[in-house]
Image (cartoon, rainbow, N blue to C red; front, side):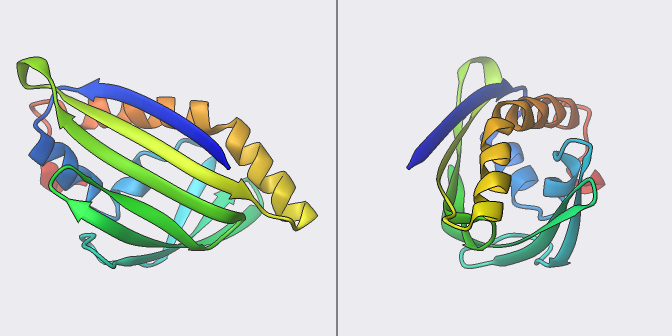
Length: 154
């Protein structure tokens, strides 16, 4: 099992951060180029048990994915891969009130690579790029959740 952890602080309330992450369209907003997210099926707002079906286009390579939203609380949720490039993937999103009105966003990804050689390679490359992916997500989330940002814009 591989485990990746990342955290950052954003100038927004826990409620605003959770609201932002509970919108399925937010995934598109926080995914860095050159990856393109194509949503196939997802509710506008994620709730316990929601399923999201999407394709991550990494250049010309399509990676089909289905995730289930689990353990939804006021402080976060998990998205667990149902179908996709990994043998196992669980992404825990946690939102914690911090000093001066800030919220700390904690991400923990646990994954196992596929035994299929092609999916193993894709999964390994994705694993290697998680630090860049989550650094970008943190930067964009901070930018979008500035106090002047309107949550209905996403």
